[in-house]
Length: 311
View 1: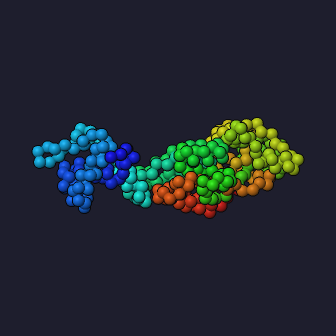
View 2: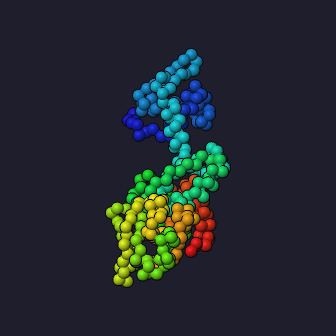
C-alpha cells in the first residue's frame, strides 16, 4: 500500500482519538457510526503512515503504545484547529471566555483624542481585551505592517486608499489652529503678517519627509515662515515652547488635551481638512472581534465628530 504523511486527514485523526479514548476498536466503530472493518482499515493506514503500531493487545482490549500517548495531545490540538476552520468566530465583549488582543497603529494625536475613550470603555467589559499601540511614521510602513500582521489596525490621517488589500473607513475630519503663549504676543498670530513673522515649532513624524502642507501653501502665495523647532511627537511640544514666543499649528482637538492652557486662534493659512481613518487588512474583514472593535471606534469617532471645534 503506497501511503505517506499526506494521507493523514481529519477522519483518520478523529478515528485515532476515538480509539484512544474508547480503548476498543468495536466501541470506536459504534461511536463513529461505521462498521468495525472500516475502523480496522483506517487504523492500519494510520500505522503505516506513522510507522508505529499505535495500539497493542492487552488482555481482551487494546492499549496505546508510548508513541500513541505522545501523539494524542498533539492530534487533539490539530483537530480543534481544523474544526475552527469551519466555524465563524464569535465575540461577545461581555463573555469572560472571549478575548481580543489587538495591535493598533496610531500616533499621539489619536492616543490623545480617540483612544482614551476606547480604553476606558473596554475596562467595563468582561472579555479579555488588550491593546498594543505602535507609532505609524509613513504610509508604506503602515501598509507593510498591516499586511504582515504586525498591526491589526491603524488609525491615522487618510493616506489615500490605493492599496487593494487594505480597507479603510472614515472616522472624522480635523482642522488646525494656532497655539501660542499670549504673554509673548500683543496680538494673536491670526494674520499672514504676524503668522509669518513668528517663530514656529512643528511635528515631523518621518525624518525622510519634512514636507509640510502649510509651507507648500505659503510658498504658493509667495510667503514663508521660520521653523525653529521640530519634534517627533505632539506631546513634546507644549513643554518645549512653554514660556517662549514660539507658536505652533496643530489639530484643533488637541486644545483640550496636549495643548491645554495655551491660547488659540485661527490659522491664517487656508488648508483643507484632514480626514482620519481606520485601516485594516482584508483578512480581518470578517473577524467578529475585529468587526466589534471597528464599530466601537467608529461610534467614538462619531461622538468626536459631533463636538464643536474649539476656536
